[in-house]
Amino acid sequence: MFKCNNRKMILSMIGLALSLTSGSVLASFCQPQWHNAITMQDGAITLEKGADTFLIKPSGQLYYGVHKVKLNEQQLAVLADYHSIMIEDLPYVLSHSQFIDQELCERVAKRQMKEHEIQSLIPALKNWRSVSFK
Image (cartoon, rainbow, N blue to C red; front, side, top):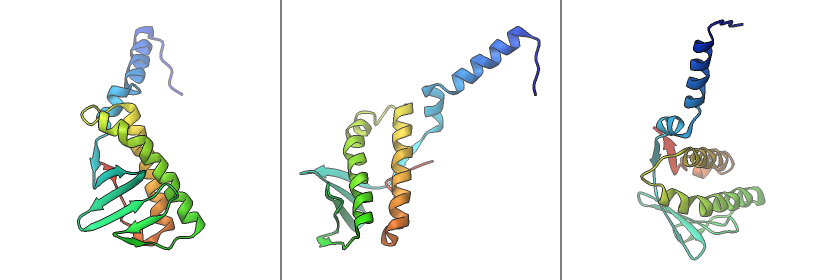
């Protein structure tokens, strides 16, 4: 256990700990790297990566190009949840494209977790990644 009798040193250490947890310091460690073009139209989310185009409907139904992808209930549910996250995130991300704050970092981390879940449930989407941290 660390013991310090110097009050000024203790206060300095507390100040440092508080500054490290502030949004500006956290945001400086959060450097999102965007990987695909994402658009919203008529309630659907479209992700484009190179020649590949994926469309996700609010129900979780996935289309690869114009082809409907056959999914089970669990896969549909995870994509419907991802759709909800994206519908909520996209306006925030667009409005903060030049300003990285703690909330943006948290949203990116949440999206990454959901994309990892998608990758584990739908092997064909193992490279599905809209964003990562540098």
